[in-house]
Amino acid sequence: MPSQAVPVRQPPRKPARERVPPLAPQLYQPGAARPLRAKRRRLSADSEVLPHSHPWAQIAFSTVGSVRMTAAHGTYLVPPSRALWIPPGVEHAVTVVDDAELVTLYLHQPRGHCGPQLPRAQQAPWRQCRVLEVSDLLRALVLQLDDAPDVPDAPARPPEALRREKLLAALVLDELRRAAPVRLGVALPSDKRLRALCLAVLDDPARHRTLDAWAQDAGASGRTFARLFRLQLGVSFGQWRQQVFLTRALALAARGQPMSQIAGELGYASASAFTAMVRRTVGQPPSRFFAAGA
Image (cartoon, rainbow, N blue to C red; front, side, top):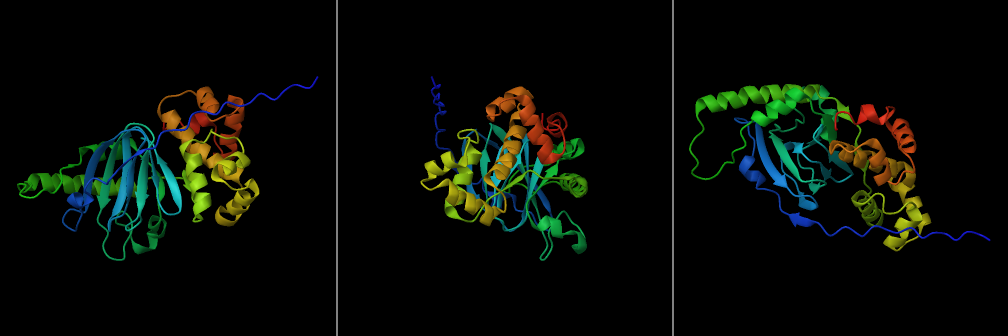
């Protein structure tokens, strides 16, 4: 007698996120006199900072928890072990994965320049979003920066405070120039239908196992979306989703979850299958790749 298929119980859909505006970036505007400014903000899980941009560059750190920052062509995970560089004028939104404290550095960029005070010949990689490793020294320096806003009628900052800020800023910029880039971005398409599907996968990557199931939610065929993945992103759905799993696993590792639990949460049948995926994708075992984020 043939065995009957056991229906897979789908997890409940996650509630809609609370959408909040950016926290007055104009009150932290950098300039020639103060080229590096710091801002701190606590954000609750499942909230989202609305899309916005500004004419200066930005470095985003998470001292506690993980956030995901989405720009035009990709989305990037920012756990405590990494930081995200966003060039001037790039619109971006922030999705909070865990309760987080986000430290944002705003960097003055002279006209025609991009990067942490680099010669023009070295600026090309900094004209796009990139994830960077955060050294212990860089983290310590950032936490020492003054994060007071430019409120009206505020007393002038004493000269010794400005001198200290200038010294800290010089060291921060030097550490940024030395920081190793990390391939943790997930590409996003321009096609509205495919982008909506990709964002749904990012929100809850283990909800469905197949592209056909995701496509059914989106009201189209799996074949249509498979073609769009190839045309828009140059990869298959499976290849793209592996990068999603990798970034999600990094956020879970930052919470201290063991690899076996991470593998199960992402829908892998075993920890060994998950380990094989990580090795295949980044060329390192999970124990090494996630060590900085754990």
